[in-house]
Image 1: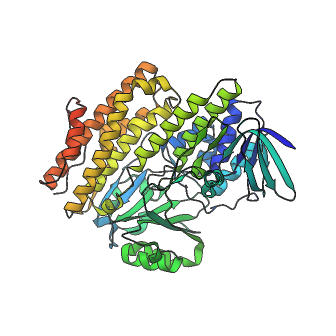
Image 2: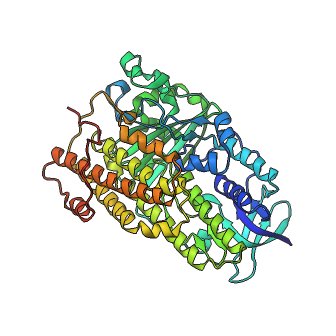
Image 3: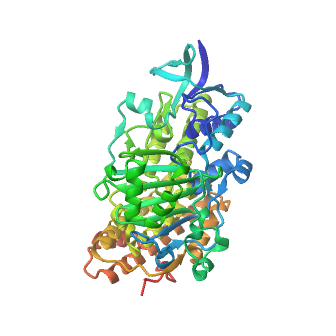
Length: 532
């Protein structure tokens, strides 16, 4: 019999980071991680989740203390960048949305093979048991007393643990066993592959003015999005020298069967992104892998239980690779799980906290899902989509990031005191997404040669910089209230912009939401000027 305080099923990013977070919080805790793959992983391991945004990056570099590894072995990301380049090969003659220079708070492009091999080393160095090449055959959850996990590698083992955490990825062992999966109504598909070479987007134009718009010919370090109606194509560089290329699309507009093999994906790119297609064709001898994934997005009925089990990462739920929220939700769920384990080990009842943390986590999920569901049709709209991206960033940095960076995720008191503001922000977000969708459906956009420079919006750059501030409780409450007022102003300006473009647009729902939560008017414009 093998006895542990915690058994983590899955030794990928979610499981390994949870093990390290638990060890840092509870040094005496006995932890076993069970991973079906044999290690080490190859570099450029074929996993989704290669790009991190601010929460995930802060979790890795600061909460887990991996900043040296990220600086030395991974690539700092030059933010998100968008090109409205559907059926175009003149990337310098379309609208570009991105920053001209790096903003303050970092994100990273992650080679998952390099990172997870390093995490394995850290886990073992911390005295955590890591079983590799081991398959979980059964998880027997107990109402009281220890849980049992049957594992097979070269022999069969029964692991006994007070806590079981499922971090098994899309396999979702407990999610399947307990019938927890939820159809969330977001029907998108993806296919992606890697080339063992750099895709140098900075070389796609020789125009000096185009190069001068952006810092040091480093566009290639961005997560570059080539966008069109119903889809986006990602370009993500990896520190191993490979480049990840993905197609993500709404099933109703671009059925998966049209790009579910390398040859079909290449043909699809020839139509929708011909410049990239030519590069992929030229470098096809460098192809490393290919995978297609149908309906990748799903929800989950339960993720944390007072019966001492939990789900984290894709074992629980998954949203969408757009905006790279995967590592964020790993960071959030792992933080809640660590808090629950710590409270239970201290002898506290966790019935209430498990329920409240789950409600908060699923609320974050639902708010973020609204950014994706039914929104893909607008992705090629060079007016509505930039407004959406600015709004989505502001909502993310202004609300969700604040809770994580200020260590307030588990602060139930602050959440209660901010109930009005958070509820208003959530409703306004839903109404803004509806308005953006209607705007894009009602107007043919202009797509001039221009760069919409996010770094040139002072309030936007400051919102990013302020993530690093250290606030006391009063300062935190004031920050959320001011950011909610900022969102009110931004939503009002988006409403005015949409009405100018489509005078008869139905905006009553957003107008009512804004009226329900009155805020002082903005002193200056928050959006880019519309195209002439």
